[in-house]
Image 1 (cartoon, rainbow, N blue to C red):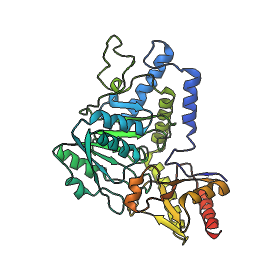
Image 2 (image 1 turned 120 degrees about the horizontal axis):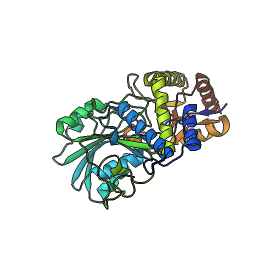
Image 3 (image 1 turned 135 degrees about the vertical axis):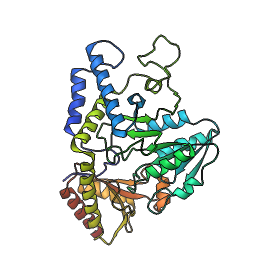
Length: 381
C-alpha cells in the first residue's frame, strides 16, 4: 500500500476534473489571455475572468478585479507586505506565523523600513487577544495572522481579530494558505483587508498558482512593471487592479486548473469535504492515543481544527520516523520544523520539530488503519 499524508504541503491526488481542464486548455485553446484578439486568446481571457468572479464570491470580496494572481501564497504575501507598508510603519504578527510571513517582515525590519511586534499565543496556538489590543501603536498599519496552523492544526479567531483591527482603524491581512477551500472565509464579516491564498493545497489546483484578494480601500504598490495587455500606449505601468500587480503573461494553465479545483469544492460542498476529513482525523487521533510511545500534540480546539496531526515517538528523532515510514511502509509524511520555527517555539517542540500527518479528502480509513499498524511496528522494533 502507498499512503500519501502530506496534503498540507501539496494536496494529492488532484481531482480528475482538474487534470482534464488543464489538458483541455493545453490541447485545445492554449492562447495568451489579453494579448491578442483571436479566438484562443479570448477563450483564455474568459477563463481568467470567470475564475476571478468565482474567487471573489468564494471569499466574499466586493470586486473581482481585486483578485490578483501570483505564483503561490508566499509570493502573494511578499507583494502585499512590500507594496503596502511604508517607511516608519509598525506591524503586529502572531507567534505562530509561517516563514512566508515572518521572513519578509524580518527583511523589512532589517532594511530599516518597519518595526514589528510579535503577539504571543496560548497553549492552543491562538492569538492572545488582550496582548494584541495592547500592542497597537500610533504608527501601526497592519496586523497579520495565519488562519490555520500548518503544524498543529489550530484555527485562528479571525472575526475577533478583524473586529479589533476595525476598531483601531488598522488593516488586517490573513495568510489562508492552509484554510482556503477547507473553511469558509468571509472577508466582509471578518473585516479582512488582504487575503493571501495558494492553489495547490486545499483548493486542489496545481503548484505555481496562488493569489491575493484585496479590499477596495487598500493600495498596494507594484515592484514589477511591464506588459499587461492594457494601456500599452502609456510609458507608465497601469495603476488599477488587477493589471497593477500582474505584469507579464499569466500562468493560464495553472489558473484553469485552479478554477476546476474550486468548482470541484463547490460541487462537493466545502462543509461536506471538511466533515469527511475531520472525521478521519479524529479517528486517527483516537487510535494514536492507544499507543503509549506516541507523543501527540493536540491543541484543545473544541473540534475545530485542520485535518492534520503532529506527533513524535519517544526516543526517536522526527526525521528518523519519517524516513522509516517512507522507506519501509510507503507512507509519506513531513518531519522537522515545517518552515514554521516560531510555532514550534510557541508550542515547545523547537528545535527538533515534529512529524506531521496531513489528511486529504482522498485518504481512506483503510490507509489510516495501515498507518496506525505501521507506527505500532516501528515502536516495537
